[in-house]
Image (cartoon, rainbow, N blue to C red; front, top):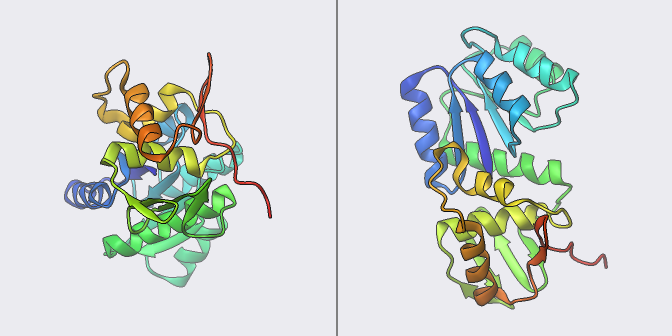
Length: 222
């Protein structure tokens, strides 16, 4: 899950970023509304955590701009503004959820997972495709009921492919899901991780689309 964190408080932002990364998310952090608007226009995120009281451009203006241009990225407003009218204003501006600071990091992560599931049209909390079960909350993967050990990067890559099953994803999109802006990916990083996933979970799970990228087929409807 790739998260855009928009928070101008250095101490709080660092804590949120560290906490979400510890729980398995890839987190890119910006500190003002203009930077958030630029990031959202340039790249794709699974979900955005948005403060309202931001420098340069308010969180509400960022949110209204997103929705006006048709950006459906799920947004969780995380703010110290706790009046009923603040909550109504945030939700009416296009927020999908609203949480008041200080927030428990595990509750925040659970809410973000729920927003991503809803955005992808996924009802169940555990992703199941072709005998592979991925539990984003427990950070576990099973093949035919047997626990499979994956590295953090392998898990992130598999989660991206399974969450967006049926959609072809390019190497750069998969790298962004694993690393975000921190970079560090070698030229063949995705290919190496794909090779490891096929060895651990079966060669038929991930399709290579030559000249395009990779894809996991959607589970057949029952």
